[in-house]
Image (cartoon, rainbow, N blue to C red):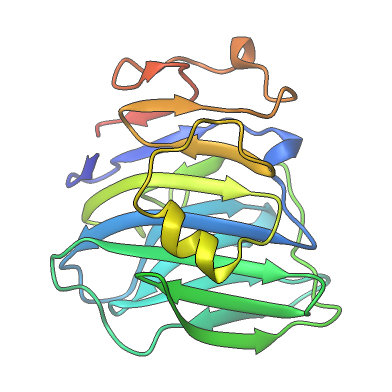
Length: 212
């Protein structure tokens, strides 16, 4: 799906299953030529402009990022800009067992930071794709596809394999997947009847597109 106009975003309403803590994996495909400032691929905000987790670009450099309890930020950054207009796969992994936050680009680990005791800040805001949230101008000017959220650590081989395949929705630890051809929320706690449908998505409808 393209995010090319101001305020383009997809909003997924708040659900406790989307709040991540000890171990998780975030994935998405994206392409952009945006080259300045912060641009968000996905973001789960908390109060006061902070976040439970985020995949983003800063001046074209990819990053997985979260605000930690009680204050401060934790991030793992890429090696350089990848705002070249080509499709790239990004994956951010917090491994509570190894106390690490890792960033993968196109199936290759590019950074890892030590995060022992640095748990993500929790909140009750919705999940935003293509922007940082209501009133947030950090929109990604480009395209996003295959956004996936897991409540477990994916191995390096799983990252390499999953980026090129369509998921069934029954994979262990898969909380949500937004492929923008069909979207599904395999976690039974995410009641689709409580979420507004989006005509752009077939099958189970679970988000709210704005201008996209």
